[in-house]
View 1 (cartoon, rainbow, N blue to C red):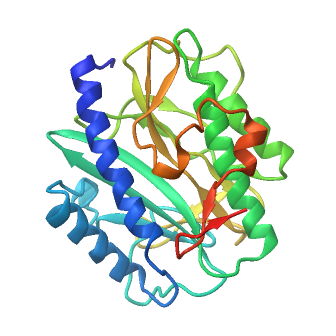
View 2 (tube, rainbow, N blue to C red; view 1 turned 135 degrees about the horizontal axis):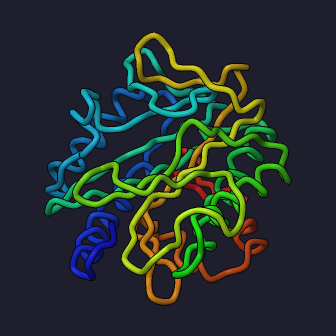
Length: 277
């Protein structure tokens, strides 16, 4: 379950490459593009520019490079030519990348054009909660500490936490032990040890937490039709705390700064890549 320093270094390399994929998305105007177009663009970048493998394609029979989850889609949204992004949408892109046999996993929710204040608050709260979970990671902490920090932030912001899906260990396989829940009690669960690598990926709904899966067998939506948002990073437990292996350039310094400062930082990027307050 724990990784050697060499393995963590390989995972960090995959993570840096994956962060550059989100840099590409940050620079891309999303309005008017279909999620299938974006999937093809990301695949070309990963394969041709990064000489890496899009790890999600073919995994469990999934035919695409990324999950594209728009508005009320919670996760596992399937790219489609008919799914054209428009002003006011929120969309989560969940992407995996394998280099030298090791996989990194990350996701980010984007605002497309001018988004309603309620949607903006949901996205911001989800992003803040991911960081609260990340800041709970250190040797000797418990998995329940992560879930407690995330769930507490959801309740304070009037959001619900999706419970059916969780973070996971990652390495040479996309999904490894342990499972990392985004709810729970402090001081419970597995003790964290140096060398553990896993994802933290909370999904917040604006309404109730209940979800359902559509007939395609992949797309998970909120049961009440409310908006949903998600953010994800791959992290490693270090001797003194945590390293975010998929850290994006605009996030440098996020781990160490107080939560209040994080809320004021460049947490959300518009579809054009312009920082949003």
